[in-house]
Image (tube, rainbow, N blue to C red; front, side, top):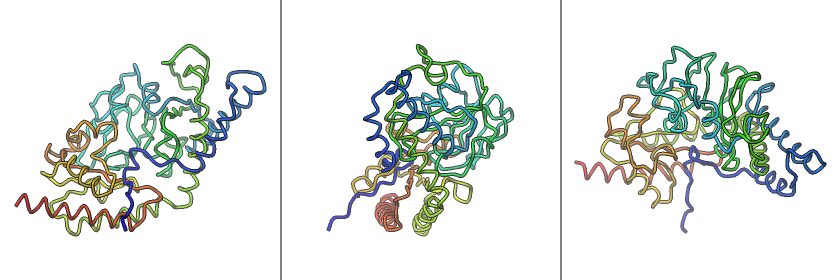
Length: 349
């Protein structure tokens, strides 16, 4: 009997939660414009505000402003454009498009931030899973990978603004949000209407927003119920299974605080894209880094910023688990990957 495929690329995107699907289907019948004052418009507005409250509660952002955008990339631009903030080379490309790379990164993947009010820093890295200790009064933080996986509250992070994406926690693609301390000054980038408190013009994506709200609420419940603790146990089982045999492999971030679902490993000389293709043929979906850059077939800039050379960085793959990933799934992956690892070692001898 042929075994089915195993999806191990949850940091790129996740499967749609049933709660999000149900909310989106229901929203299809809410056809009013949220800016209209009649009954149909008020019904649409109520749906938007319910989702805003769900996301604020999941973020621990009561009393903060939630601004809906087309995704985390747009939210990053809204928060960062024209501000000239300092950043590090480990940041997502959507952040590096607006911030410089002046902040130093150490060998553990941690970033030193001497002036938080003039800097941006991610909560967790999508490639390595390394979690940062965010300084108080930080200007902007990319919360995308940590949201729903790590216990935190925006209100006690001490961050001026942060941004998140729905499809990283079981919501739909094409919807994200900027969260900001109330009273924070922000210039709209998209103009033409007064939507989103004047911060982002354009009729709201009602179906996406409904799915985002439902997904955020469900993700918060999973976190409280210890689902990601169980994922962490399975990730560690996988890491130990590989580490027991793969003596030539570097396990990036091992021993430090990481996302509970993320494993980044590099085997010098064994190209990442080769491994991704080999595992795909074996029935496993993994990646060679961030989904926004892995298709460019270049060495990981994140690992190079941490001090690894191009050969190591060019061999790094990411395995990222989800709540539905089982121990059987990861042991099957370990068997398939180690089979190819042994072949690589034999060829290189």
